[in-house]
Image (tube, rainbow, N blue to C red; front, side):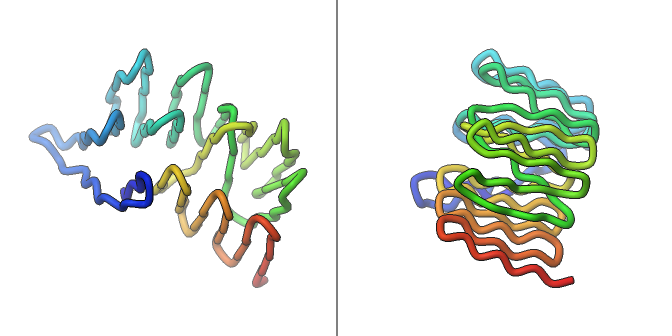
Amino acid sequence: MILQVTGVRVLAKTNNDSTGNRRALYNGIGIANNLIGALYNGIGIANNLIGVLYNGIGIANNLIGALYNGISIANNLIEAQYNGIGITNNLIEALYNGVGIANNLIEALYNGIGISNNLIEAQHNGIGITNNLIEALYNGIGITINLVGALYNGIGIANNLIGALYNDIGIAKNI
């Protein structure tokens, strides 16, 4: 996972401990793996695979439940809310300013954005990002999910065969 803070990229590696569980800490970031529980400012993150929290961003994966300032972010059977953005993956359609970013059987509305993926529901005015294999950058956020690449604040979202640009959005989709 690569974390970007105030324009500086820092590589945070998750190394296996003696039990095979990966743990990483980076400036208030708790990354937990395999039935791991992490606490960060009253935050509890329980995850079968990965739980990530970074400055109001909760990123969860696979039957994950995460709470952060009323945020609940989960994936596969996911519901995500965080005064912020929900970005989902696989066959995406994206529109911004009244932005809808959709995935699979997705319905999306922005400013009060609802983004649903598979069984996902997400709302933005803040950022909620869910998906399986996730890499996330916050503050000028870059999010790569499965084969997805996303940048927010001048957002660029590249997913599977999809390319999307945000703020004067350009969407290039190859199918």
